[in-house]
Image 1 (cartoon, rainbow, N blue to C red):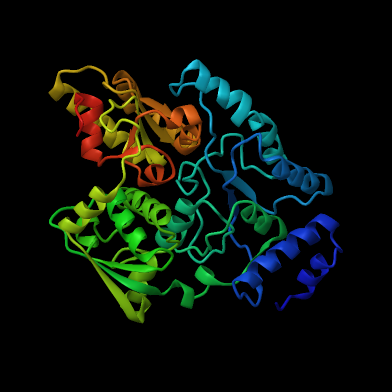
Image 2: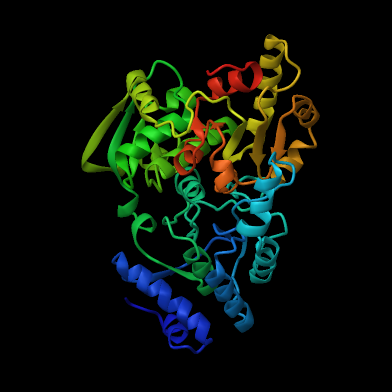
Length: 425
């Protein structure tokens, strides 16, 4: 790998032994992917995926201590993925005992380390750090060092920033040393599409279902999606960005997509159009029947497939302000139709602390609370990692949560019916 004089000096230990090890790690990481150089991280803020104080992460805490002691801190302030615990989220005594004493017993300690390393502020914990209410929104063309898959795909696709799908800890290392390897989605060639996705549905596709179908088909490749703009428009307004947030998270978790282009909508597609498509690109046609086939293919891993749901999670990734408002109205209307005053299944809507704060300034917060829905900053995935929680029949409209846990996927309309009226769908 070709290094600048400054990079060589860091590698040789002139700025400290631990910073040298960080640089050596980034170089080896880049060489694995054929990178010939390192490029500066240019974003104002970074984002760290490792937000949870798992007792088993001793080596992580040791690493952080060494970096802090030597002053090898992040060159950027950073946000983190969501916290794993919230006292307001329903759980029984045993579940809570396992959370606090066996799983996330190091949470407070770890958050102290993160603060010393450069955490943006005490509540900068969310997987949707790019929300306006959070303040970590990269600009087009900026080079990032992120790992959170749903944030990486959003930053690349909707914002036009440049970031590879890094692993946890590599994200903070890039920020500490100030450089990342130049390969993959950082390059012009790596951002070209090798798949053409043709949307031929008779109605607006469910974002999480469409993303799942595309992710499972293209895996880590870049798709160029045609025909979706007829359903979500050609302007990146709040509704379109919310749709793409959920769509992208499903492509990234059900596959390994780090970038997609939406014809007539996303920045690079608007600028370059079909010039982004590689010669010989494969074609995948998605119609109503194909979406139904994908939906029907999801396994039900509950011990009793006919069990009554005990909990519903919405917001993986975290919900936007637009979603919290529109879902408040949906829940109110559906409850009224059913003759119910409160949701019939314990339901948790999750969002970034900054988004929740903004939501609480609106009239909708009190209205949603009156329906019995809980609003939380928690990470549903971290909650479901508790073995006792994993045995619960939990429902969700998140294909990311379905993929990584035992939660069962339903469409938004099916979820709404279940939490307000009961029944299976």
